[in-house]
Length: 143
Image 1 (cartoon, rainbow, N blue to C red):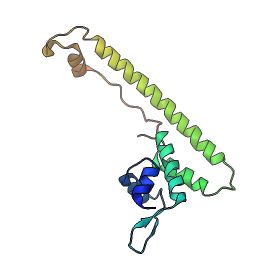
Image 2 (image 1 turned 120 degrees about the vertical axis):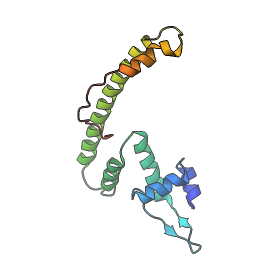
Image 3 (image 1 turned 90 degrees about the vertical axis):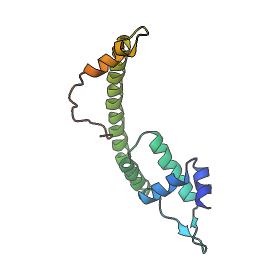
Image 4 (image 1 turned 90 degrees about the horizontal axis):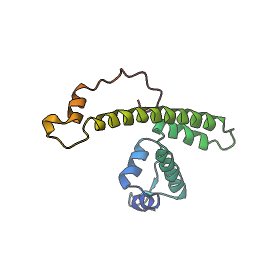
C-alpha cells in the first residue's frame, strides 16, 4: 500500500507517517520499481501502536523503548511494567500541576466578577502582579 493508504488506515496524516519514519519509530518501507514507498500490515500495526502510545501522552523515547521490547516477544515484560509505572508517576505530577494552575485561574477569575472597563479589570491587574513560585525540578517527562 502507498503512504496515503497507510495514513488513512491509521487515521493520521502522511506527514505523521514521514515524521515517525524520520524519528526511527516506524521502519523505512521497501520501494516499488516506480520508487514509491510500499507499506504492509506490519507498518499499519506499528503505526497504530505508536498512535495509541501518543494518545496516552508517551514520549518518543518511551515509545521507542516499548517498541524495542515489543521486538523481543520472548522476554519478560518487567521493563514494560516499569516504564508504565514511571509514566503513571509523570501523569500524577502533571495532574498536580494542572490542579495548581486551575486554582490560580479561578483566583484570577474571582478578581473580576462584574464587567468593568479594561483599565479596571481585576484579572488583568492580577496578571500584572501574580507571583509564581520558583519551579522545582519537574519529575515529568515533559520538561
